[in-house]
Image 1 (cartoon, rainbow, N blue to C red):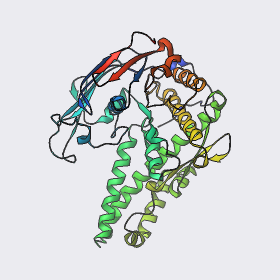
Image 2: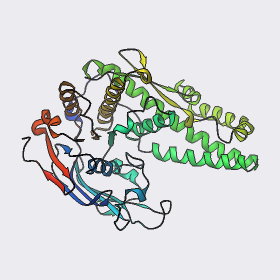
Image 3: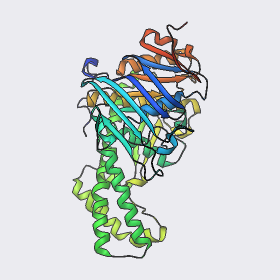
Length: 397
């Protein structure tokens, strides 16, 4: 992974391609027995009362990328209650590759662990959702993320890994492989199976994967920090000062050869076997890292900022990352903003819409009041979401 070469310069927006979902079909997904939405490359506003399924539409779109979506739900939880147990998502996207059809779903057979998530691209089976990243990158912000800065470090690591994945398609697989190897090591230690050759083999694998994971995180944070520093005066939201905390991450950030960092981590794992056995878990590694965020203008830890300041800070961070993805990958990510306008005054809402437009992303937004999005004008299509389904508004009236 490499970020844009000249982060302190603003590239021509024409160099960032817009990728838009123009068709969306849901079958037995969450509360939608059958949903059909046809549009164009403009932004999409989903307006309606709470409980009508607006966020479910965003969740479906978030599954057009690797992972478990914006709710991190199990496959069986996504199936419509009272339905057959299977569910489907189909989308057509327009971008620099022309029109591409993406599909995913589950056949509903077996318990959640036994179920398989099906993935198709242009009607052909794909090995995994990782292949979606060749055509579409997705980023989101939901109310559930409002406590990111005050919650546990694990939430911030997952948030950071989503940011990394949008830039480095192989990151998710490396994280999963590291965690699998770590679980294997923990089981060996727990079972008193101190087979040193076996443990050494696992620890070598963990060292290689762990340093790769840490390196991708360090590079993403560095790229994002440089972009934020260069564009902070242009952003309507407070800028974030970022740092990545962790001993492994500090060793990687020191700039030495990756092989030396791997040797260091492998030695620490070997030396810590008895300590980790007593603790019942591995105490060293990238799974212990934390993303440290400060409110830049106030030089204050984000966790100590007001609720409103934290919301604005997180929104600015998501927008900065979207810009970084566009400048690095040449295509703007799809943005999913759930209930984002509810806590912004009219001036801030207008600034948000202009910022999204400048990034080049198609943005899907939800809200209970369509009038909160009136500043978008003809830049967006508004759909009323109700218990009877979708209805496209002919105008803002």
